[in-house]
Image 1 (cartoon, rainbow, N blue to C red):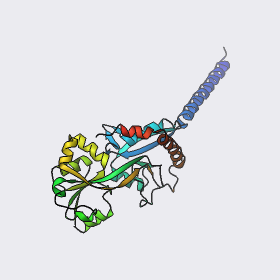
Image 2: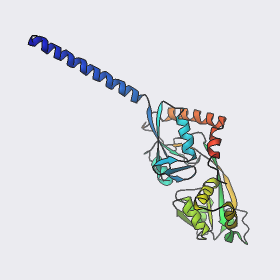
Image 3: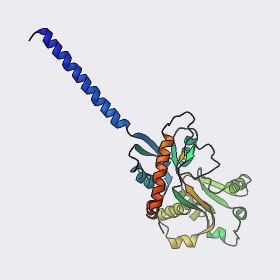
Length: 275
């Protein structure tokens, strides 16, 4: 075989090898590029709704969204955890695209958009029996003058009137990172009242090891402040950082609405009921 023929054969083989590798790479890129990666940030310490279990996001909202993700094969949906206050700040600064489960709040006019409501939550005021004794608590928060309130860091569930009373030193407002810490302080009498979602409080009390009978002996639900709907809040995106945001939000909304109609979300939430 002549040197020229051998060289031509070698070059032809090399070209075919490069083309084959290029085609394979293009196929792999097409396959990986067919699914848009989306990261949904959730609150890391709000059981049973959204919380970090070891290194894995858990909770009712997370379960709902994982079930919804099964119906969205065009997206590769991942979950990450962040403290509530930090999550809101990151969202407002446009550092993350989506955060769950903030309530639908018109005061957050900087939010780019919300998902459809996912879960309804009932916000209640819980106080110690000692504080309630000999008091008439009909008008929240104005009948609570002198009370020591606990609050989960970053939460505004207690309402603007209570925060204003705290500013005026008519009540004391002390923050702690979790519902469990606040409820332990409530049970120990270090604070008088605490505001949170009813199911979140019941879950924390169960984790502490308090039975329903003990709860009734030590604590009283003195007011229901309202029913709020948790959802995904999406960051503003004037710079087009997430060009797929609106298409993703619309597709996810359609799945969530169907899950509501089919009773799937109610079934998931029922599995978290404690008492």
